[in-house]
Length: 252
Ligand SMILES: C[S@@+](CC[C@H](N)C(=O)[O-])C[C@H]1O[C@@H](n2cnc3c(N)ncnc32)[C@H](O)[C@@H]1O
Image 1 (cartoon, helix red, strand yellow):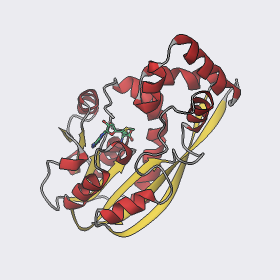
Image 2 (cartoon, rainbow, N blue to C red):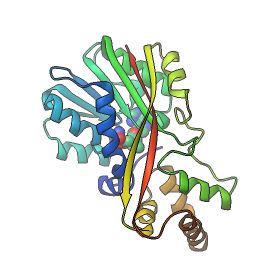
Image 3 (tube, rainbow, N blue to C red):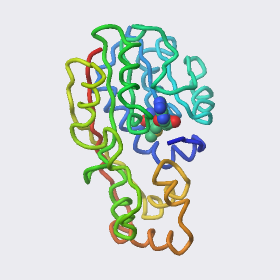
Image 4 (spheres, protein in one colour):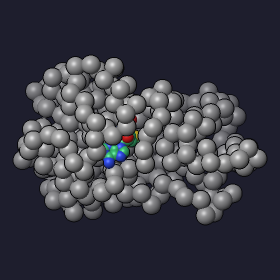
């Protein structure tokens, strides 16, 4: 999945969820002053910015294959070493980091086991390798209402449930296949507020991620039908969505 979208549109669609998730994820991995951290699949920098706050820009590196995201994070965090590239072939030497983290990325990797193996390679022995992916296979991901409505109208439509790490236990299996040790699975939940149904729906029309790509392919009547079906499942006034992600924290 390529993310050839602006950082602003990403922020309106997924950043609303990934910013609060980054707070929970950083807490889970127990980021401590003095550590060096790598943010793999950093996007526009939700997690990277937190790592910089806690560790300082000199101690943080980030990498992402999306040119607009790399440009945006370089502007946001000019003192961070930001590279363009994928997890499967990290341009960093062995054992250089205490932490290698991938927030909402494993399910987009071409080869998740290779990506996690690379994360372990660049992390010192005993350092932390951690990843999280939304619970797209269950009913507790941030896009559950959307994909449910899609499949009611179009049972053959693609979805995100089958992606790597999106079901319970799968991140742990991938971590084991990547040779990681002391694998601890857990689930993190964040709550995000919306002022109205329109506030929730409009970001789906921005073309971001698999959900945005699906909406972009629909003609107007089908898009209206999907919008109406989603509206049936949500309040019209302000509401909150609880969104959960499967996580693993492991050791290199
Ligand atoms: C849902 S976004 C998550 C971005 C950021 N980590 C966050 O939490 O907001 C997924 C990111 O994974 C990146 N990505 C896709 N394939 C990748 C790969 N093979 N290796 C590393 N990152 C990848 C995308 O460019 C995108 O920035």
